[in-house]
Image (cartoon, rainbow, N blue to C red; front, top):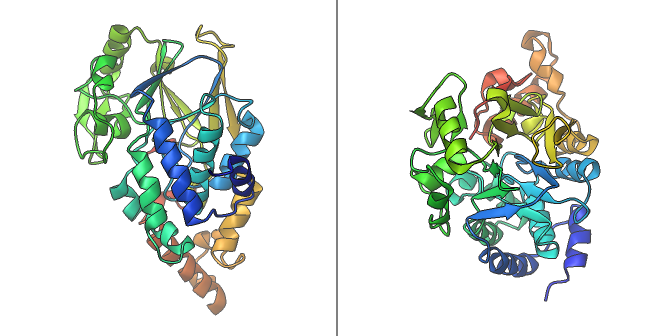
Length: 357
């Protein structure tokens, strides 16, 4: 039997757990998750967390400002891995916390909780690097993703998902009957829940520019809220420069919890603290935060003990000395390879909402 207290202590310190311990944790995690329905019910107060993407030290910052489990009742909306440097540490500490406090932390599946996506966006490579070239830890953790729930309803009035709505889902009953114990399909209702996005310029559905899921408009939102007697939809999945965004007067809310995304976007992050479901001005608040100092230091450490100054991106290459030019070339190559080519316009500042895988 794994000592959860010891594992948690090591995880808070950012230490890797052995492959054998990870295997035991993942087995227990699956045993716990299989008991949960596709649509889970929670009661307020609830603190909602958006995408984290392997930014482990920013997750610890969330616990500092929002409270450490079990003091706070947490709902995480998915995308725990990929992009950041510490996907292993991030997902492992969440697994341990779920095992230790099963009624105080709930984890929804995001589009990055997928074997196919994690092969290409960092998690697979990170597992190989940290576990001596073995893919076993990646296999163990991605197997658990198939057991994560798809949605949560808070106080019977707030619907929470990772991505968005689907033309194949008009009622909650349609979500309850989905077979979730599998890899996320390329299309269909399960894919739509983790891939879709709101678009304030639309009224109805439109094929998503992401290549999966849909963009959906006001008519879709109004119909879904009305038929299911909900007040609002809370989701993640999209980078917001201010850490959150309200769509259609708050009928749809986007929460983003990875500050300075990919260590270069310059965005803020937030968690949404919901105190009750009366929909009044004091019913909820966004706790906005910036990247933790440890996260910024880790970025510099990773690329060579401060070897690269991000401001070099703004300098004329002709004005750089030979050593600085080499450092800039290393920086550019690192980001191109590690992050699979984030759009160039994000080098300095993220727009209000940007589409990301």
